Amino acid sequence: MKRLAIVLLVQTLLVAVYLLVERGRSPEAAFVTEPLDTAAPALLVETRAGDTIHLASLRDRPVLVHFWATWCVPCREELPGLLQAARASGVPLLAVTDEPWDKVEPFFSGEVPPPVVRDVSGDAARRFAVSGLPDTFVVDADGRIRARMGGPRDWSSRGARAFLEAR
Image (cartoon, rainbow, N blue to C red; front, top):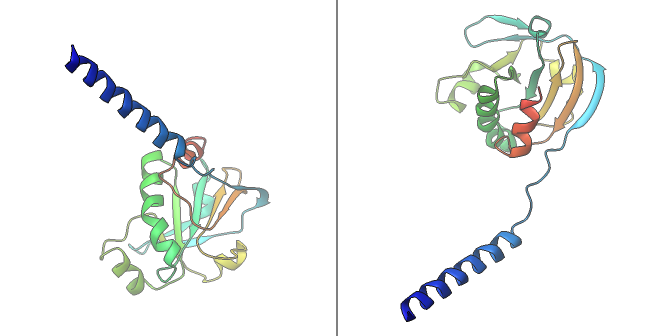
């Protein structure tokens, strides 16, 4: 009987400790977006294979247009998660850089993922009014920018998954 009482006491203490730890956790940060409603500028990008993609040709559903650079520390931390989240959700992604391929390839150990593209004109970031890197835009099927996410995001968060699933 004493053993049973000790086991119950230990279990009760463990549950109490668990509840205290859970209460002390900070809630997950909200996935903040800036709502917009503006026409998306023309965008012509080049794949690593040398093909060109016009943003207008992807208008059957919303597209994420993400601006990044290999020298940008927050970009380096965010991009792998964004690539994985976009692939898992099926949301089309154009991860746009204006850097030459010989700088981009080492970032991915030589295997550049298909969503990573190069800005052919070199001025897409200016036309999208990118104010800092990373910067991500949602371009709706009607060719309008509907949301912007300036700065890095945690693309593995519940908020990010819900955001992508809504697309």
